[in-house]
Image 1 (cartoon, rainbow, N blue to C red):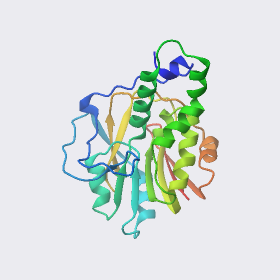
Image 2: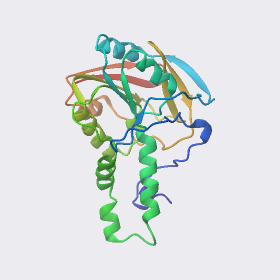
Image 3: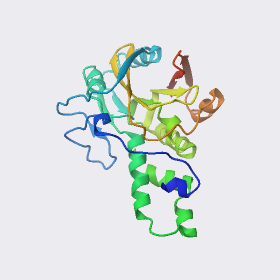
Length: 249
């Protein structure tokens, strides 16, 4: 039984087959934030994939046009195709797979437990406390570090309290005028997917082993509340039940 299951929260499985893993960098950043710097050459894993047109990606890139050597944070796996796409355009790219990090964090917390949970265990492992402790150990970057972020559909798979805290945390890391690209499912997804950039208007969608089941489907009003500190929000609804959204701070 998983840690949050013991606390009455369903988290689902978090195992990932090696074939579904993204590429790992040869060098990790040394500031303790767990991010991955884009270096070295890698081979992409072979996984089922399809390509989808992304209007929001086109708009995302338009907002970044002329920025020069900006800084981008990719909150998904470190795919070489995505890294190369932005590095070739002059960006400094950092990757930090927040879903994988959250799964590893929960696994470590569960390993610490021995025997029945005590009242003190419950107090230290409420969703609020776990979210706070996770963010104290991850995504540690100075305020205003990034010009752009690829959030993907990560929020749908995070426990809602963690999702709320994560957005607040990320907001501090985005400079004024910075852009965040996120996606939200309109209905509960049957499987689990990862994404990588193909070109200026296309994304590859890769089927992957599920880390977590979808935790919440966000309505438009809830999304606006989550990103309330951003001055602009623009959404694109597609036929595959994915709502692409851009936020400008």
